Length: 257
View 1 (cartoon, rainbow, N blue to C red):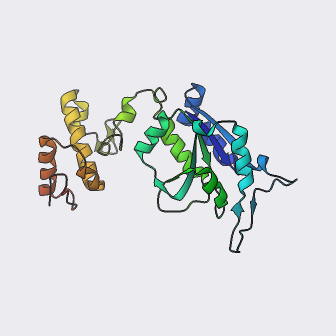
View 2 (cartoon, one colour; view 1 turned 135 degrees about the vertical axis):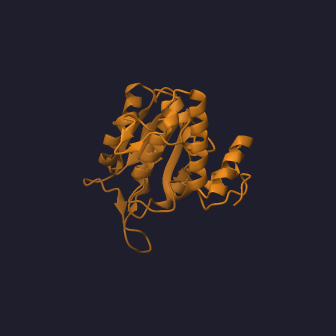
C-alpha cells in the first residue's frame, strides 16, 4: 500500500505514521507513507500556502497552486493515482472502504485541507474522492487521513500477525465483535466467563456468537437487518427480547419486541 500525504502540518502526522502497526508495516515493506509539506511548493520567501477568501468572510483558504505543484512533483500518472480528500461533505468512510483501499494497487494521495478549506479549483480540476469520518468538522484533514490510513494499512495482508484478529472484529462481518478477556481470571472480584476457561472450543464459539449478537442487538440493531441469521441466532435474539436485555426492537432481523 503506497500513500502520499500532502499537508501544511507534517509534524502532525510524521510521528503517527512511523509508530505502532503503521510503522511496523512500513518496516516490513508492506506499506509506504510519504509526508509532503505543501509549503515547500509555495512561492515567495515566506512560503505562504493560504490567503484570504474572495468575496470576504472569516478565515483563510488554502491556495490551489501549491497543491497542483505537489501532485505534479510526485511524477505519478493520473491513471495510477487515487486522489483522496478528507471532507465532512464526502462519502462516509466504512470498513468496506478501508478494505478496498488496502487492496488498491494505485498510489493513494491524500490532500489534507485546513482553515476554511481548499480553493475550489483543486476539487473541480483534480476531482479527488471526498471521504468523511462523520457529520462534524475537524481543524484539518490530517487527523481524518490518519484514521483512514490506519484502518486500511492494518488490513494489508501480512501487517497484522494473526489474520483472524482482523477477520473477526467489529464491522469485518455483519455483527459487532464479542467481548475479550485476558489474564488473570479474576480482577477486583470480576471473573472471566467460565466458558472461556473451559477449553471447550465449540462451547466458546457458541458463546462468542451469542455475545456478538447481544452486542449488536444492544448497540447497533440496525446491522441485524442485513445480517444472515441462523435459526439458533433467531432463537437467541427472541430470548433476549423476552428477557428484556434491550429495549430496542429488531424488526428486519426476524425479532420484534
